[in-house]
Length: 353
Image (cartoon, rainbow, N blue to C red):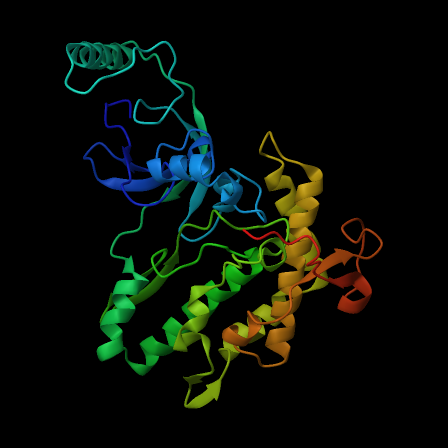
């Protein structure tokens, strides 16, 4: 950016997201400012502006904390960081400008003034205010799952070994989405990289609308935000090693070994510290976010033990799980029933949208 190669706003999506480029103008990362998220006040995309004005009663998602998406992106595939950047490319709240008219002499004058102002700002290194954001490394060679799976629907080019690896990667994404309760996983925001007989990989991008304070099913009657991958054949009982089974054995053993009461306690402590990085963080809302997440982990563990597939797992009743006797302090028992208190989700305050 010091060389004058500034980020470029992405044409897709409903938020102000920017491609960050290196000196050769090659895309290297995605920058997503906090104040330009889908429901933020400085979102530069017109569809969300009209939704805020014309459909204010349905604006946002009742189960999510507004403008916290950049926090949800941290350490999710691909590698993501929290950074601060300033650039003339970003959308700022402008003051003291004349009202522009297309094609008028006034518009041309202001356009020239803005060009000169931008030029001297760069020369004199006068930067605009930095923005808090997630900084996600750009991944090469990936295509939308919608495109790739459409190609595979006619004739799958995968060998048995590639198919097994893809199933493991797919199930890892299912676990990720389910635990963080991603409310925005559709077929265009997870990517597949495939080179026949060479490489196969999955990248789960756009994880910002996650970590709700309540289960989406209990927040809205009309907008449950389901997982779209649950309708795919890959989420059902699949053929692995010539045996029909809901989960890959290696992945299942790894997850059951990982999901201990101590791991859940440490994970909650780490997330609590991370979420408090945001200056607007609310301890009560963070507490509610973690209750939902622990409920998802509880259901995930039960599904693994009961040999239930990802498609069956997402149909389990949502629950809220709390520590018994402030389990995040000091030692904690290894018995899940003794360590946690499980309660059904509360549907009494559901809204229509």
